[in-house]
Length: 338
Image 1: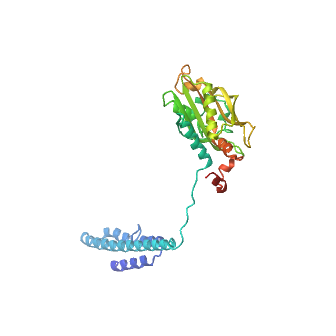
Image 2: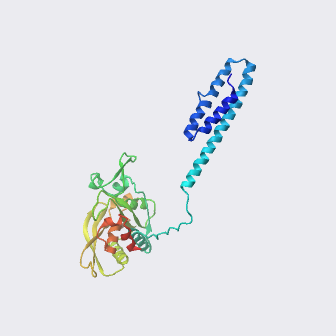
Image 3: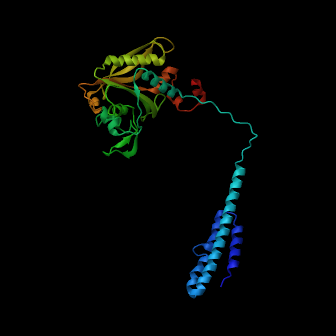
């Protein structure tokens, strides 16, 4: 029979010679693997007499335990060596001078976002937020968009590879208008809310971005007229731009979710931008079909909604002529606002 003490000594030498964990595992396989020498000896026990089998089995188990102990000791030694090398390579020279922290700042679009929230909160509006991956119903149907409306096409709206319960692809919201419906369906009238957030459309040039920010506003009650829309939005612009030297114009337009609908333009009456009309928002009285989708009675509840681009407002406030500057991350540009 094989001398087990020689087998143990041979295993120890092979383990000690292994310089890498992979080599150590190869050496382990030669002794206590599925076809290793200890395994072969254990399988041969069946050929021995019962009394001899018992004593020989005990010897083999003691040899196996000794080999496993040598294996674990070598594993620990290799792990410690690997840790030592890693610590040496990642050592920090504490005598080096410290690295100064560059002060951060608020992005100009976020400044606009915060300013809009402050203005509308001051006149009793709540602020709502919602998902950026929306359902087709909240994005289009609830807002009175017909099934063949161009906004549903891939040319205007991004879609993700998921569908809703009706099998429709889920869009990235093209506007924050879905929050009108979401908020109204979970709150009692009167409803005064704005919903700022990221939106997505297939468009990209000096004045458009595939991702941009929009604020949606909604006021619904039993007697909210177009006059309230004109008053609220005109006063918002004067507060936002911190000047009374501007004129606001409400120009007839068409949107499926409002009736009547308007485009809102403004013109500064002093300064370098004096005398030029600038489109600033879309707005109107909420369409009765949309009011029904709020879960309200359009015979009783009426109100207005508007949607404005935060980038557009920011560009006008700071005199910026290229939308792409907001997203390029050029610190020379961003430091001007902090």
